[in-house]
Each structure stands twice: as structure tokens, then as C-alpha cells.
Image 1 (spheres, rainbow, N blue to C red):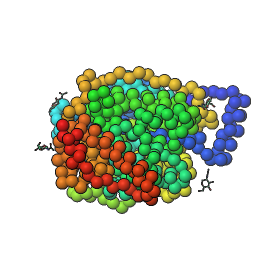
Image 2 (cartoon, rainbow, N blue to C red):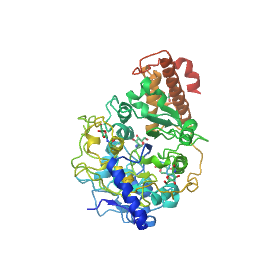
Image 3 (cartoon, protein in one colour):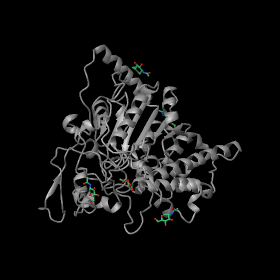
Length: 509
Ligand SMILES: *[C@@H]1O[C@H](CO)[C@@H](O)[C@H](O)[C@H]1NC(C)=O
Ligand SMILES: *[C@@H]1O[C@H](CO)[C@@H](O)[C@H](O)[C@H]1NC(C)=O
Ligand SMILES: *[C@@H]1O[C@H](CO)[C@@H](O)[C@H](O)[C@H]1NC(C)=O
Ligand SMILES: *[C@@H]1O[C@H](CO)[C@@H](O)[C@H](O)[C@H]1NC(C)=O
Ligand SMILES: *[C@@H]1O[C@H](CO)[C@@H](O)[C@H](O)[C@H]1NC(C)=O
């Protein structure tokens, strides 16, 4: 089976071909990747069919997308019941579909024993009568114009799964540590890069969720955290983007500063604008010819996808199991998510499905990112867990050309907003935003307070949470820099004492 499919390569003259062959032998001999900078952007909670499924019809028929014949019954117990089929009129979604472990289990299995992808409608109906329509809708390519351009010009991976069939923070964690959550003391790909003398940088907007990893709070890493608005374009222009460049979106939706993480109910037009900004910045950077941009989604967010989730021979990463009552063994993957890769070393119109190994059952999933970074940068560090040792690697996506393309667009199309209303910054926090607030509470020392976490997060509006988070991250980074000046050991982590008494006024109003 040919799993690596690309569009036809344009003819070249014999002389040029000879030159290219010589060049490729040289490249093969040294076995060096042309890529020196990998840029990662992880957005949230959308399935592949929902975001990109309709691109099969209008952009590239080799994509494993949708035709409109994909349907789910209203009841999986009664197969003759009415069903709802996939349509192309996705729009602004006001309600967040289900994505707890139980909800995903029901979506994927319905009432069968193997993943039948038949329970999305039934599960949505348990939440609200109108949500069942929402989860069976995909965007027309013109509603996500940036992705339409990138899929046309570069590569789509149409068989890439989230690492676990459940909530978000665990999935984000797999991207950098290939591991299930156990308090997050684990080794990460950032540590492996550091051990090998390579640099990394986190460019964040509201909060770097990568600080959930305890290791990343060490003093030696504090200068790796940069404010996206101040530093990303500057570093790109100066050719100073580090070997691993992570971009974190805005998770809080404020008036004038809308969230751009694509999490429902946030407007995906803002995610499109972020991707456009990142692409155009990289395209005009002196580092462009050695850059690979990876865009993916932590999980499917409850939206339908038709590809059966892999459940055979998926290794548990580290021997841990999930909490009662399921004691999940982390031995099957989550739902397929959109993954797009961009580089001048990628052939136009590339579609990549499964990987070539390392085992016959290996798949692309979030742990493919650390696995590929290890391979491309020839890191001498061990694999992080059993999972990244198993996951497919994607270095071949930049391995087909012998010189970088010169025809990549410099500018992507403009993006029109899909949402017609203002941000609801006075709203209570979503489940995910409450989780995000736990992090600064830990950084700040507020998690020792008796009001943590329920009273604190239950009463916060989105705007208050945003201000709290920003303040906490700022104070943590400032205190860490002061500790460095005082000569503290580089592996130390600053522990802040709660100062909620002095900040309670700003918190409450
Ligand atoms: C969907 O239903 C919920 C209640 O079940 C309601 O609050 C919401 O406004 C409805 N949305 C639409 C678009 O009809
Ligand atoms: C989506 O966001 C919710 C938070 O709102 C989070 O709990 C969930 O784990 C995320 N993932 C998805 C898919 O929701
Ligand atoms: C990238 O490589 C192409 C082809 O060799 C060259 O024309 C272009 O100037 C290079 N761009 C940069 C930014 O180095
Ligand atoms: C990769 O690293 C090993 C040492 O860890 C070295 O022997 C080898 O030559 C390196 N390969 C490349 C292609 O740089
Ligand atoms: C939080 O809300 C509860 C009830 O909704 C209220 O009793 C409590 O005083 C509030 N706490 C703060 C700190 O505003």
C-alpha cells in the first residue's frame, strides 16, 4: 500500500535533473535534514472532518475527507432511527460540544465494541437538542481561507490522531512529553534539546501552558519564555528563532483581544488570522529556507470525524493508568484532528496518510512531534516514553525536494470574521479556562489558599481570569529573573507566597 501520496512533480530539464541528483546524493550521504527550526502551533478542539473534510471535494481528491454521505443515527440502539448526515455549513458555534472521557467514548463507540464513529449525534443530543446538528457540520473551504491556501500549497496529514480519547491538557502534554498526566514532573522534549545544546523558545499570548511542566519552571529556562507580540516577529526578522519555536494562542476571549485558539465558542476566523500572521512572518524571515511549521489541534472537541480511531497495539506510554472508574490504560488513540505542515521543502499539494513504521501499527499522533524532533535534530537523548518510540515520524515530508521552493506565496488571503457578536468577557469560565487558571495559582502560591480552586475560579469572569493569569505569569517570570541575579542554582524553581490579600481588590471588582 502506498501511504505516501503526492501530486505530480513538474518536469525539469535533463541538466537540472542531473544537478538535482548530484545534490540529493550529497544530501543523502550526510543524512542531514534541511530543517533547522521547527515551529509548533497547537490549536484546540476541532476534528479533521469539521475543519478540513470538505477540502477533498474542492482542493484535493486524495484527501480522506467527507462527501456528505457520512451519517450518525439519533439512537445507536435503534439503527432504523432517523439519522443526521454531514453538511458543509459550519459557522460560528456558540455551544461547546462534549469532550469528557465518557462523552468521547460514546461518540467513538456508539453502542458497538469497536470504534464505529457512530455516536456523535446521540451523545450531542444528551447535551442539547440543537447540538446534534452542530457536531455534524464542516466548514466550507472559503470559510477557512488560510487553511484552504496552505492545504493547496503544502501538506495535509489526513491520518493524525490526538493521543488520548479525552480532555485537552493531557493531549497538549503529549505534544512535548509523549506522556499521560501524573503531576507533570516528567522529562520533555525541551529537556532533550537542552541536553544536546539546542535552543527552544515559547512565544505566548495570555499564558504559556507549557509551564504546566514543572521542569520548565526551572531558572535555567526562564529566558526561553517570550511575549509573542513583542518578540516573535522581531526574532524572525533577525533570524534568531530557536531550533524549537512554540507558539501559544490566546485562550481568553476579550473585547478587542479575541481568543485565537479555535476552542468553541471562539471564532475560528481569529485562529485563521493567527496562522496567517505566523506564516507570513516565517515566509519573510531569513530562516524561511530551513523552517518547518506544524499546525495541529489538541483534540477533536466533540465534532464528528469518520475515521475509526486506532485501538490495536497502541502502547501505554509509561505504565500509568487513568483514574477510577475507568482506569483507562492509555492504550488507544483519540479522534483524528487536523494537521497541516508548511515548509519550502514540501511539494505543493502533498497528502500524507499513515507513517512507514517504526512498527506495523504505528500511527501519526501528537507524540510524533517529539519523535520527529529527536530524529531530525539527531538528539542523543533517549525516547521520552514508549509512546514516542512507537509513533510515526514525519521527516519525509521535507525529504522529497532537493532544493527549497521559490514559489511559495508571500501573503495569504484576508480573513472575514464569522461571529457577528462581541466577546462575552463577563461570562463565567469554561472548563478549560478554569483548568488554565490552576496553573498561575500554582505559580503564584495561591493554590495553598482554602478558597482554591472552586471559590476562586467559580466567581471569576473571563476578563478577571485573564487579568489574574497575566499578573501571575508576569510576577513568576520577574521573580525568577531576580533569583538568577541573586545567583540561585539554575535547577531551582521559584516558589511564590500567596499575596492574595494585596491583590483581592483587583480580583473582585
Ligand atoms: C440551543 O439550545 C440551547 C438550550 O438547549 C439554547 O440555550 C441555545 O440558544 C440554542 N441555540 C440555538 C442556536 O438555537
Ligand atoms: C476542549 O475544551 C475543554 C474545555 O472546555 C476541555 O476540558 C476539553 O478537554 C477540551 N478539549 C476539548 C476537546 O474540549
Ligand atoms: C531560499 O532559497 C531559494 C532557492 O535557493 C533562494 O532563491 C532564496 O533567496 C532563499 N531565501 C532565503 C530567505 O534565504
Ligand atoms: C548523529 O549523532 C551521532 C552521535 O550521537 C553521530 O555519530 C552521527 O554522526 C550523527 N549523525 C548526523 C547525521 O549528524
Ligand atoms: C462567590 O460567589 C458566591 C455565590 O455565588 C458568594 O457567596 C461569594 O461571596 C463569592 N465570593 C467572592 C470572593 O466574590
